[in-house]
Length: 116
Image 1 (cartoon, rainbow, N blue to C red):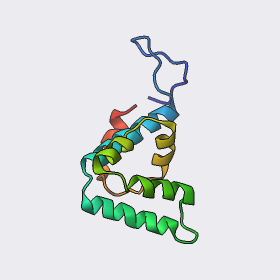
Image 2: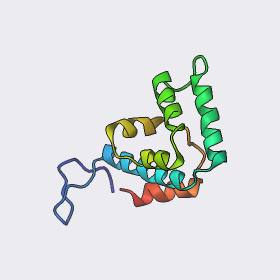
Image 3: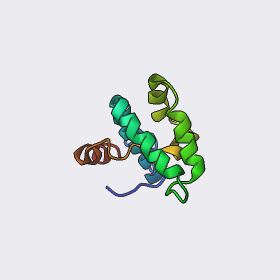
Image 4: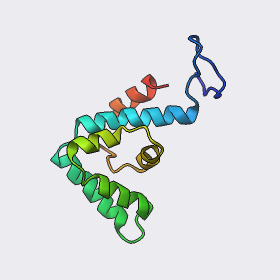
């Protein structure tokens, strides 16, 4: 099934997500799995990745890296909540996640198939 316009209605009468919203929902689903796996090793790798981002000419804008750095200083419970928060700020921030590599490829594919 291809992308649907924002005006497309589901059989139940509600609007189905647009392509952009589907991507956001997929990101939340992926980060829900990341949140379930948060441990010292996962956090350590994320901190290392952010350190690389903050290095001169890092691949991610400094403001995003600093926001992630701040989030990683939260308690684990607070971080888990933020990872799946459906706010504009977190939707933007998840586009540059320091948690790449936490999920297996088959898990990513399953989310891409299930969240439409």
